[in-house]
Amino acid sequence: MELFFDLVFVFVVTQVTHAVEAHPGWEGLLKGLLPMIVVWWMFSAFGWLTNAVRPDVVPVRLLLTLAMMAFFIMGLSVPYAFEPEGWAFPIAYLAVVVIHCVVYLTASAPSARRAILRNAPFNAAAGVLVLIAPHLPETWSWVCWAAAVPTLYLSPFLGRIHGFIIEPHHFVERHALLLIVVLGESVVAIGIGAGSPPSRAVDLPLALGVILGIAVTAGLWWVYFDGDEVRAEAEFERATPHQRQMLAYYAFTGAHLVMIIGVILVAVGITDAIHHIHGHVSPWWLGCGAAIFLAGHAIYRAMLKSGRITDRVVGAVCVVPIGIGASFAGWAAMTAVVVVLAAIATIDHRLVSRRRAQRQDQ
Image (cartoon, rainbow, N blue to C red; front, side):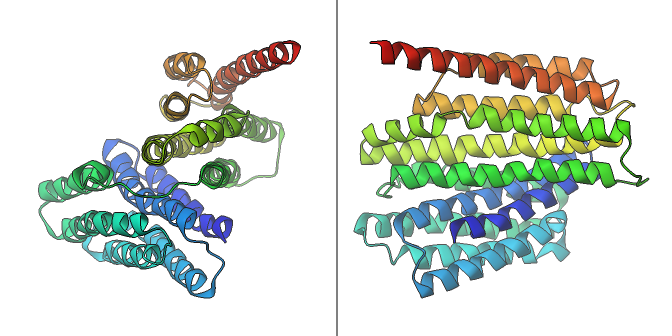
C-alpha cells in the first residue's frame, strides 16, 4: 500500500520538473519548488503516519486512497499554485491535512495522538497561507509562501512537538523505496529528452545521450544505495525515542527533501542535455542538481553516522564548476557529472569493503 501510495508523489515530481523546464530562471524555479516543498512536508508526514498506524485495515486503506487522490490533484495544480485559478492546490492540501490527522488519531500510542494534535494546527495554518496567497498583491503573495514553509518545517520546535513513535527498520526502508521511485523521474526525463521535438528514430547521438543519462541516474542511485540503509538502521536502533524523532526529522524529512530537489534539477538537466546533445546546454542544472543531491546525502550521513561525508562534500564543491566548464555540449555535461559520481561511488565502496575485510580478519 505504501509503495502504491508513493506513485502519486512521482507525478508531483514530474509536474514540478516540467514547471521548472518551462520557466527557467529564479522565479520559475521558486514557483516550481515551493509547492513541492509544501507537498513533501505532508507526503513525508504520511511516512510517519504509516510507521504508527498499519495500513492493512479497510478504513485506513480507504482514507489513504482519498489522500492519494488529493495529492494527485495537488500535482495537477502545481503549474497554477500561484494563480487564483489554482484554488484546487490549497483545498486538496487542507484535505490531506484532515485525513492525516484523522488516521493518526487511531494510533495505539497515546503520545503519538497528542503529538499530532499539537502538529496539525501548523499544517493547517500553512494551507491557509497558501490558500490566500494568490488573491493578494504579488509581493504579499510571495510573503505568504515564504511564511508557509517555515510554519511547516519549524513546527516541531515552535509547537514543542514530541511523542511520535519511530520504528527504525520501517522508516529507513520506507524512505529508501521512496527515493527509488523519485529517481525514476530522472529516467523518465531521459525519455522526455529523447522524444522532444523534433522527434526522430534512435541514431548514434541519441543512443549516446540515453546511455549517459542512465549513467547519471545510476550514479545517484549508487551514491545512496551502497549499504547506508543497514548502517542508518543500526544508528536508529541505538537512539532514544526522542533522538529517533529528531533523526527522522533532520535525516529523512529534511535531508531527503534536499536530495529530491537535487534529483529534480538533474532531471531537468538530463532533458536539456539530451535535447541538445551536441549544442550548448544550461551550465547550472546538471552540476547544481548533482551538488544539491550530494549535499543532502552528506547531511543524511552526518546525522546517522552511516559513512564518510568528505567525498560527498568535495564532490558537491567540484561538480558545479566542472558542469559549467562542460556546458558546451550535452554529452560533455553528462559525462562530467558521471565521472564525479563514479569517483565518489568507487572510492566509498572500496573504503567500505576494506574496513569490512579488516573487521573479518580481526
